[in-house]
Length: 591
Image 1 (tube, rainbow, N blue to C red):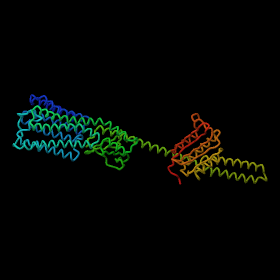
Image 2 (spheres, rainbow, N blue to C red):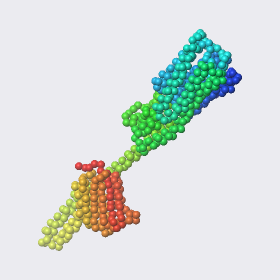
Image 3 (cartoon, rainbow, N blue to C red):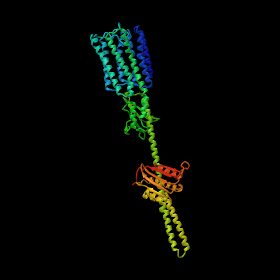
């Protein structure tokens, strides 16, 4: 609704300026004057409304529209009525001052530095004291005027109270010099801002700076031509050029903003290439600051939980962020969830499309970081869960081994002793029964051996008591194949690590005995590197891995090694042999 009102006001003001000029201007200059006065209003209003249509909160665009409406009053200087003519000449002075103020406020729509505010204050003082106040002491206005087509016979000043003869000789030359100096100061400030700014702001300032410099030169030429009393046609041309710089300055503003917008894609490409695949929050903030050319950029985060709160990138709790003054804020949302907020310097006038794009980029990066963190947490939980399963299984193995050793095996040993005693006692009286008891004793010894072998397969007590190298050497001595064990520098580790490597080596050794045709020896090597590594190698004929599927025993070993965060690999070459290698990460060594 507000935009429609501004647009309607602009159309009405432009039409009124053209109609008034057509009715009041000198016949020989009416067409040019009407065209200029219409353009002075229509162009800035149209450009400002177009910008407001894209971004209703654009303060500078609103200022441009208001300036266009103000500049429409300069058409009153074409009137033959003294009051309207005098108002038109006064508004022309104010319009000239508005150009300088717009230059200082571009592109943010506000005066940000002390120097800008001081210069704006000097412009206001000059307009009020050096121009508007003199209307009380002048019988007429300086002629010719770029805003009026009358060169002679112009109406008198309707606001004159007291005449002052020194006005033309003293005040007017001084104020004209001061006007040029203030324009020059504004240009110098823009040049400095352009040099200190980043590529985007410098690009936006370029066209506005060029138009401002052109207007300043046109003003100087017009002042000099009027002082030199140049002929009417030439000074009219200079005056028309000077009036035309009003809409041209607005065009310069729009061109600068358009050029900067064309570079938004390049800024986003730089942002994408600067960030790694998994940037830290500090790297993300620095990349956003570089893209926006704003070192004050901050990222704050919404910490979900029982007491939702906000925190900075160090994790320190902070108050909920708000947009205030020159601090702009974009809330970073992922669907219905608030991830955080991007705080930036709104007073610097950043490109709104770039701000929105950068905020969207930040949301994507933060979502990826959250997903990665969740995935890592899930993987860590899974690894810990699988490790606990292995630990529980080993604990159950040891319990079964103790039960067999301390229970069934001890009972059988006791039974064997009793049978031996009874057979000795019956030798003299019942030799046949004694022989039967001795035979039962032999069978009990075989059962004891079977239980001992079973206990060793479930969890060898030597592994828990003396560690991995000794347990493997003991197994090597029982192997049908000649087996060597090398374990230099390998000490004690957590129980689940030792048991995993032990059973992996045992499975490989048993496979060599059962399936390695032609094998005569097996070597087992333990070593320390990035983790606890093991290698079991036989000299059999090997096999074609593509044609022979892995057995269930080896698959179980592979799963167990993976559960501990390790890896297992089997390499076999026909007529060469088979090698089983693996490595387990070792986080802590047991005492």
